[in-house]
Each structure stands twice: as C-alpha cells, then as structure tokens.
Length: 230
Image 1: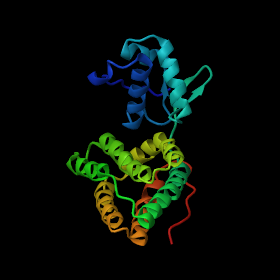
Image 2 (image 1 turned 120 degrees about the horizontal axis):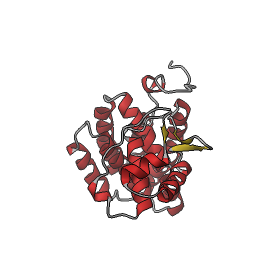
Image 3 (image 1 turned 45 degrees about the vertical axis):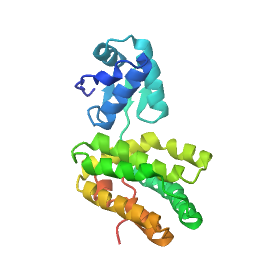
C-alpha cells in the first residue's frame, strides 16, 4: 500500500460543514497529485489529519466515489483512480459535442458573450503558470460560462456533471505537458475573438484544436487506446 504524505488543510475551509471540509480536502489532494493514482487513502489517515470522526470521512469518500475520484474496495479502503487515455479521449469527445453546440447557438443567434469569460481570461493571464490547480478551476469556469450563455438549463447541468472528470483530466494533461499552458492561453483568446465576431466556422475550428487529445500526453497514461497519428 502506497504511503501518502498529508498536507495541511487550508484555513478558509475550516468553517465549512465537516463532511464538506473532508470532501474538499481529499479532492484537492487528488487533483494536485499528492494522493496519486493507484495509491490508497485510509479513513483513519484523513480523520487524524483533519481532527474529525470517521463518519464524515466515510460520507466524503462515497461522494468522491460517485464522482469517480476513488474506488471503494471492501476491506482495503479508498483507491485513488488513475486517469486513463481512454477516459481522456472520451471526455474530450463529450466536451466537443456540448461546446460545439453552444458555439453554433451563440454564433447563429448572435447571443452576447457573458462578461465573465473575459474576466476569467484576465485572471488566467495573471495566474502563475505553476499554479495548475488554480488554472484548471478557472479554465472549467471559462468553458462553462460559454455553455451557460445559450440558456439551456439541462445542457448546463449535463456539462456541470462532467466537472470532476474534467478537472482530473485537465490536471493530468497539464502536469504531463506544462507547455500546453501557453497554447491553451492563446486558444482561449482566439476563441473569444471568433465568438465576438460570431464566426462559427472559425470558433469551431479553434475548439476542435483546443480539445484535441495530445498523443504525447496519451502515451504516458495507462490503457492507451488512441489511434496512431497520421
């Protein structure tokens, strides 16, 4: 069983309900790669680190399992799930379907872009490149703001349901290839420009490039099933 080094809980989380604190703590450790895929996290480990009983830890673990951060194995504990190449490919495909629809609606109906997208871009430009965790949170908010702009509540809820996987896949991709940060920033700005001009073809082309699985990343993930590059 892999040993995991526990980190201090952020002070701003300590005022939240206990099970929410535990959930956020373990989730962040997984996203930051401190609880690595393939390692086990024990209830006692977390309850001791946060000074809580095992009940809220157990509740948090069930939520994390539902969001596919961990697998709960009888008599063994919580196994941190590994992001696979196929999961990355599947997630990008699902995102392309939803976000392409949003782009088409925005451009064809000339739906105004939410100011939030520009605000998030400015925050991303100011964020240190090494702050992967902060960047993926902002990145997810940027794309969600675009999807939400079309006003389809069901579609927005469906996109939000991909959030946990989206965060894990994004963290894995950036950690594996940090050079992606500069390219992502450039594509975000180009996407805003294309959407502002209601240029559907251009915006869709940028999105296709933006959500294209990178072979160099896929090759370093387990269960690589992607087709070979032409």
